[in-house]
Amino acid sequence: MAVNLSTPEFLHPVPGVRLGVAEAAIKKPGRKDLLVIALDPGAQVAGVFTRNAFCAAPVQVCRERLGAGIGIRALLVNSGNANAATGQGGIDDARATSAAVAKAIGCDENAVLPFSTGVIGQRLPVDRMRAAAPAAVAAATPDGWLDAMRAIMTTDTVPKGATRRVAISGGHAITVTGIAKGVGMICPDMATMLAFVATDARLTADATRSALVSAAGASFNCVTVDGDTSTNDACMLVATGHGGGAAIDASHPDYAVVLGAITEVCTELAHAVVRDGEGATKFITIEVGGATSEAEARQIAYSVAHSPLVKTAMFASDANWGRIAMAIGKSGVEGLDQGSVSIALDAVQLIERGQPHPSYREELGSAVVAKDEFTIRIGLGRGNAKARVWTCDFSYDYVKINAEYRT
Image (cartoon, rainbow, N blue to C red; front, side, top):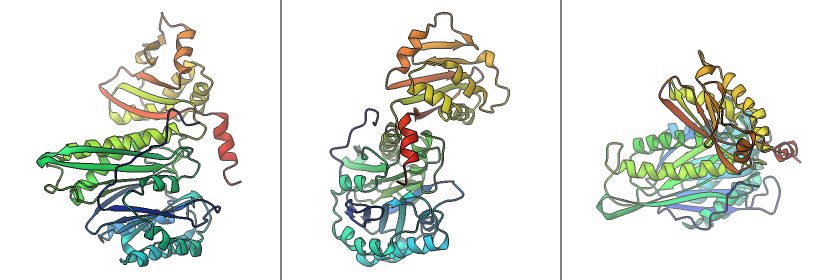
């Protein structure tokens, strides 16, 4: 039921990155559910992770290993089991499974980062994953992106990938390719979402980190499906340096070009996550302007985006703008003057300075929310700051999918 989302047919290989999948029967047999992303030596790797205090074992291990400064040689990803809320045993499992990949590659086990997604509260099937790891390493090829994006799916209905090629100075062209999974429990600071983006640009370590933080802030941290922040979310950026040219730091003229391509890939993937939101039938952009700060604008936007009453009205194609006004009012923004607030659906003005617009008619609003993509525009009339977030509606299928998640 994904909203205007199709399966990518081609993703550019990234020199220095190889991807392989294998079947480990983690949740059920018959599907490739284990992914290894092998990296050439010298690749720069940065990550951002969930802020959920109950973060999963692989998140804890990744943070520890990235902080140790060891060159990362591989990423291990499994679907079907989140390895979250599993205590010390879960951490031991993450280390054991990544050690199997390290053995197959021939690197230090601390040079392998583990990632998991799926059901919370269950231990990993370590023996099956250990047995499958060498097959995934052996299968790794530069063209493995399409198989990889399928291997990490859980309740996703469409595999998610994006790719760009851009020119930089010296006649060089660099590639940015990424994959992601996630459809529910999606909220700012990421969620039950995994994203892996790679480029062959020669980014320095600091530039890799700053590019990821910037791109994630403009993309994955601007989406929400249901307001729940998961235990496992992670977004990784790999820069292999195989694209040629001089080393690129944040002050280099090519940095803006590379950052632009990375941000475009991340934004396309973030949109795909929302378009494939569990049971989604509408892709909704929420734009808030006239705020005193970007943080205030985001606070308003997320109050609207998280409101079950707004989201169910949108599913019903009901232009019930009173619910939008309610969500703005409950946002907690201090000193908000309803007499300065305006609300529109696309170009249809609903509220102007706190009062119904004189030209508004119900059929005009209904025509907008009947579409599968539209924008809720909110003006606060108290400043010049703005923010934009993307969300979806709540349908009957959202309840069904989550009610039956473990069956």
